[in-house]
Image (cartoon, rainbow, N blue to C red; front, side, top):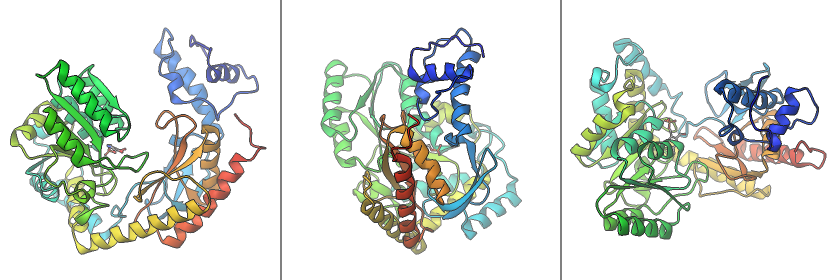
Length: 450
Ligand SMILES: Cc1ncc(COP(=O)(O)O)c(C=O)c1O
């Protein structure tokens, strides 16, 4: 392998060892970050260095992208790993919080849409990619949030990137919670160099940041960006305090409700509903991929002008195909269920399953983050223990995902367990005990890969 990458970090030394067939390479060490700023002459060499590390991880079963579903993402399912081994078990590895992706009515609506329109959207929104039902879906999302308008995007990522990049110009400012999702961070960095990351959920820090921006620049736009429920920590900001601050400083608030809309709050209205802020937030942005049984995203606003401006200037709206009629039909039916009595029942079931899982994990001695929610973040520890434990848990019949550095701080790797309404409380308790066994085995003194 031709490589001009620096070898002055432990992981790259490890890679050099692996590449030359020496012993001692550690697939439990290192992170994606080690490969971002290597300085080879040719980009192929950067990729080759990364590949040496990645394939070593895959060979021992530590590579997250090397697994796929061979059954629907139900409460129990089967994953296949790239070496051909199959693992069946309790599924906390996929996100379908109200179990709507396999709901009979949702599947029937999708099938009917295929009959009517075929399987594809035939262009971007500007090129007749929408169907009448797309507009009806926008109206029903807006109605759910008590906002006047909504605008669809092909994915939640596209909505997050698009809302920031579409609204913000070089001279403007974006203030982000440090844990805001990648789509929001990337949108901010693509739009301006004036990006400020505030300490997670720290209102005082947002306040002082806004004050110092306004001291220097009273003229330009400031966007403040947060999430309804944070996807790695399952905690929520004080939305009303942030909105009040934005009004005070002449800033605009964006709240990403990807993980809470539909699965929490009165009528599924998420944290905004729970906090009594329906219709009051400047801009709401969300994804359908967690609770609404489809890929897709949206933004919602009370102003026609903002909707049309975003439609025209968000690159992910202008230059990407519209949501397909099949996706539109699935989401439309999911919303109807979410807002019905059946939806209330599903949310109740979900909260009972979450309570059982959190309770048993706590009894087993684990530190959990956040509040009771479909995401249950459970601290495992170092990346080495986390990687091993994720594999061990899978072998124990509990399918989990590991969130590790740089997505979360170093040595704070965690299982991001994602619960759904189809999980039974007893199943969750048994799974928690199996996880405890897997982590204990992975932390044992004999296990010393790192
Ligand atoms: C907070 C948050 N926003 C946006 C997204 C992107 O959503 P999608 O998966 O629909 O692209 C995600 C998904 O990971 C998310 O967690």
